[in-house]
Image (cartoon, rainbow over the protein chains, first blue to last red):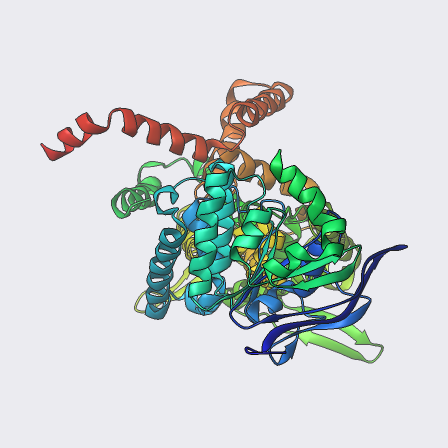
Length: 262
Length: 341
């Protein structure tokens, strides 16, 4: 392994749903500071891999290591404590409350106020609240949603909901951000805007693992691409290498390129 | 609510015993206040964490029984040759113990429902209330069962310079309920406008997303259950020392239903909703009593409820808030000008 060390290591993970093998002996690594993409046809096991990494699913075999710690067996909220935060394939925001409050919930980890301190309304609670509100505004400006702060999460148009998801995840202060099909359903100009945000996130030193079907996005932002098919890794390399790999073309890109053309 | 209107409301509520002389009206208001506290506590779970506690009356009853027993004293035969004698303690000790014991039950329920949500949470809480009711009915040594706990002492307060003040009359009880009401409101308000309250709402709105950003959802559900139960226990304690008799009927399911109705019609997940609901459904039956026979009363009562739920599905307070917002938005400039002049 060259240059930066692997921060996330998925080692021999196997997941079964009844008789179906969703992931078999999956191993791959993500290196510090890179944008890695996990691609593959529908049902290849990408979202399952995300669920395993972030504690939503427990693998039958194998383990996941992030920096010095093993994530396998931790509940999702403790995985987030380690700095590993995800977004969801199906748009997932706090729909019934304003955008600003969405981000404040995302900032949960950044607050320390304990219940009894809150009940006594100690000055430190008020100071912390002020700091969190400022941070929330900063994050909303970062993704370009500051003008929407008063609106309900569910009232945003689809593309903006996807931005809000990223804002909520960013608020949790990740050092590794997992994005599950963030631009699906976005139009090309929204996608282009989103790619800029991904670059900005990476500029903050946050490692990114991306699952995406939009090949322009994947090839445009990734340092490295891992190709998954039927629960197994079939190729790994730079975007250019992946585009030339015959097995990948057979399994995935051939069809993808045709789809993209029409 | 901003500071001045809130203060005006408190002044108004505090002035009521000065011009309402009718003891029966005061009695209705005290009952309404006790129900308002219970409804506020239910709202913390139902409105903020989104979990329906359909056994909420159990916390109320546990608070009432604990407070009554500690201020009355009791003997318990623990072994054939050993009888535990518990001497009566001052009422305030009982009242605080009632809050603490109810809070502990809330903790147990929160822990039991570790991964239980929605319908299953409802089942856990309903079963809990039934179990507590059966205990109250059958553990005759402790609770007197259906014979009820009688002669519960009223609240006494030692005032420096004035000696002991015993709350026999309606007026002091009214003020006591009002103070506990305001305290409960303040506690809930602080809580829901904090990091903890946001964690409650996160559980209500989207649990997986909340977990993914590091909210320990279960821990905050337990916190909400404890505080909610403790406040319900406080309401129960007030009830016990005001009515002065507690029997297992205090655990009747209908009381939980009334609390749910108050929260839902007033506006769940709003601070004032349960209070508005309690005022409407605490006073309405008494108003109707004077103009309609009981059967007709219940029909009217039900009809109003259906109308509110049908036309204001979010409840009265959110509907009023959005109406006010729309009104000030359209009449905005002129309204501002008037205020300026």
